[in-house]
Each structure stands twice: as structure tokens, then as C-alpha cells.
Amino acid sequence: MEEWIEQLQNSINTLDRLEKVIHVTERERQAIESLQTKWGTTPYFASLMDPDDPACPIRRQVIPSFKEKENRYGIKDYLIFKENRANGENRPDSIARQYEDRVAFTVTDMCANYCRHCFRKELVVDRELTLRFDVDEGLQWIREHVEIRDVLITGGDPFILSDDKIEYLIRKLREIPHLQMIRFGTRTPIVLPQRITPGLMKVLEGFHRVPVWVNTQCNHAREITEKTAQAVYRLLRCGVNVGNQAVLLKGINDDMESFQTLHKKLLSVRIRPYYVFYCEPAPGIDHFRTPVEKGAQLIRDGLRGHTTGLAQPMYVIATNIGKIPLMPDYYIVEKNAGEYVLRNYKGQLTTLPNIPE
Ligand code: SF4
Image (cartoon, protein in one colour):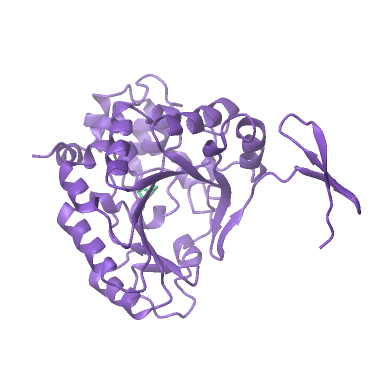
């Protein structure tokens, strides 16, 4: 049996299994026993948890918490709102749309790791929302909508599907003449790097008119190992670029050192930092959310100018009307008829002529 399947079959999703990996606190035990929620991770990702520290950044992404029952700011029926599922456009459940020329195509609700901060929690983790994942129905809709250029295949985690299913999806999408790119959102390079097998590489490799891109989600430097590096390298060998979409998470990566180390380490394993998302107002994840300005401050004080431009993600909030950048905006200090006054990352000032249009 392939190792990635074994990993999934031995998912750490019971108290007994978890206790073999970490020292479970009383509070964690009670949360696991009483909350109605899907949870679990791979033995590989679980092995990266600190067995003695309940505040371990990986542990907090994996183990349910009573804080998920507190919901002061989360929007009820968040996915319906966020993915414009009630706006009257006739679309299959599998197709979510915020833009004219691109859609998210949800093909499964299964994941290798059930992230406690997931913005699709209602669907994937708490299972309060049920959608129909009819792949052929979704493909047909895309075929009929000639304005769609770019499809993001998402879930759940689409790389949990078999090689055959992934091959079918890619092949069918590539047959659609108006399609120009296919993207996968998958956490497998981080939580299940064993998934990038020779079989999957065969499906992904080769030169094609319609390229495949992968974006993963890594939120803390401790999630990056030699296995991550190998998985990413394999994807790159197939001509598949790998970007990161981190989520800004309170107590996990919202301090300068964690934030900076994460972005430097991503590049060391060839993952390009692409986005840092503000933690969305989905229900039950208030405890992960920071003030909005936090991400911009971290980029200003920890990344911009402090490390290579390749390590600069775009800080955004994903909303029902698309992504809105929340980047630091302190660079232009002043503008007058003759010049701009600009500030750099060290606070030093310089000027640039203001050229009239
Ligand atoms: S892998 Fe993605 S979809 Fe699955 S629980 Fe984590 S954030 Fe949600």
C-alpha cells in the first residue's frame, strides 16, 4: 500500500491514538470528548507536534478547543454568504464565484488535516453545511461559461482524491478551449508530503497548453521538514509551481519572529510566499483572529526590506466581493506639486520628482 494511503488510514483522530503521540491535557481531552466536530491529522503531521506544550503552533491547528463554541464575531452561514451561494446565479453546489473570469471548484470535503481555523469549517469540519460535489456537473457548467479562464480546484483537499480522479479532472478541464489555467489548493505538501508520489507526478508532469499551479498552506516554520522540501521539489520537477497561502493566526504566527522565520524558511524549500490571509469571520474561529492591521505591521516590520522580495506575500482579506489587499501603506509620506517624500523600512526618507501627467 502506498505510504500516503497508510497515513490517511492511520489518521490521528481518536483520543487513544493522540495519547500515543502527545501528553493530552485535561481540557483537550474534554473538548475532544464533548465537541461534535470532525478532527484529525496524519501521523506525520502529528509527529511534528510538541508533546508537552498545548500552545504548540501545530497542536493548536489540529486539536479541537472549547473556544470553537464561542462565537461573537463569526458570520452565521458564512460560506453561503462568502461564496455568493444565494445571489440568484444558477450554479452547481461545487462552483463558487467571486470574479467574472475564475471560479473555485469544490470537489471533496475530505482533508488530511482538519484545521481548527478553516474558513470552510461549516462544510469541512463541523459538517453543518452539505454540498453536492458532482464533478461532471461542475465541469459542464465551466464548459458552458466561456468567460471562465481559470479554475481553482479546492475542497476539502483535492489531493486526497486518487490519481485517477485527479487525472480525470485535469484532462477534462484541459479539453475546455477557453480554460487557460488550473490551480489546486492543497495542504498535502505540508500535512501529507507523502502524497506527491511517482503516480501523481505522472498525472501532473509534461508540457501542456493549460498549466497546473499549486498553492499550499503553511502557517509556521515548524511545519516545514525535509519531506516538505522533497514533495515541493517533485512538484516543481513536474512544472508545477508551489505558492503558500498562510493564514494569520493569533498565538501561532502573529509574532515577528514566527512570521519572519516562516517566510524565510518557505523559500528554503522552494515555496513562494503568495498570500497571507486575514483570518476570515467564519463562525467558531474568533480565537484565531487578530486586529486587521496586524498582518500589515508584520510585513512592514519583519519582511519588507528585511528580507528578499521573493519572501513578500500579499496580505489580503478574502471577502464575498473578492480579495481586498491590506498591505502597509506608509511608504508615501507626502506628495506636493514638486515631489514625493518616500519612507523605507528603516524609517529613512528620500524624495522622488512628482512628474505631472
Ligand atoms: S486543509 Fe484546507 S479545507 Fe481542509 S480543513 Fe484545512 S484549511 Fe480547511
